[in-house]
Image 1: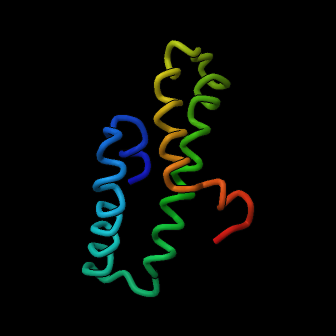
Image 2: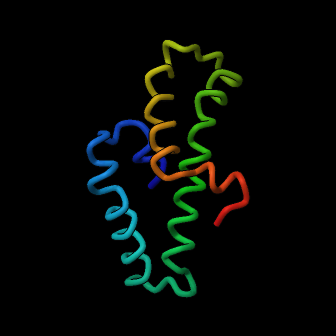
Amino acid sequence: MAYLTRVNFPDEFREKIQIDLVKHYYDSLLKHGVKDYTWQSCLKDYRREIASMVLIPMWQHCCFGAGHAEWGEDIDKLTANYEFFNCDELCSGGL
């Protein structure tokens, strides 16, 4: 989910439906038999993946030599998602 919403997900959807989308995903997991997985755990896992997405441009640069022209626009959206979901809290031992 985090990968699919990382860059091409419009900014206005982030605030309006992104949490609802993750909640729908979580409800679907439960409906299809996933047990012992809380909403809090699901949201935390989603936030961790969002945090890891910020590293994609660095990985692309290191492995493929991709420059700013290839990923410059993406970094703004990746960091906006990171900030919206307060991912700093995960890095500082929160949650």
